[in-house]
Image (cartoon, rainbow, N blue to C red):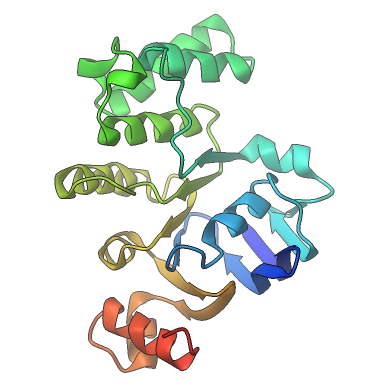
Length: 242
């Protein structure tokens, strides 16, 4: 099992952002956390990537406790955050090289990994452009490539297509589909079509809790709905969210 949470909870003062989260995510799975803004998706990602400490409960990545074994967890995870974490004043090549240097790669391995990312993400035409001049779609692609430099076993993609136009979103879907099966991917999104298109399994998060979890077919059947959007509305109504 790549990810397991047991009664995971995160509170900020009187507000509960994540409430009694119990999840298992298999190795090699693309698992989506689907929910509106404020549902607790990003907070969950932050706890699983050791960027935030749980208020209570436990989280494990590849058997390592995210609280007490954070160093081990960080060695095997990569994250592309919602706020694209690229250095605007550096070129695409320089951003990738900087990340490789952070992980202490040799000069030879750095050159090899950077060349591989440029090729895999089809960034040849923008390789020497400063990140600040890139479109939103290219920046997102660069952010994911930077997260992959360390060869993670688990990749977190937090709202990877947020704010992109339809064509850029579809192109990024192609990139993400190409990663499926190579590693475990946890994707957060509020786009129904994105979750439908990419996911092996989906967890519907509402007000910090998992309201439904399963394959697309399982969620639609349980909600008696013909598509994910209708199922989401039904589940939200049942939870008293709308």
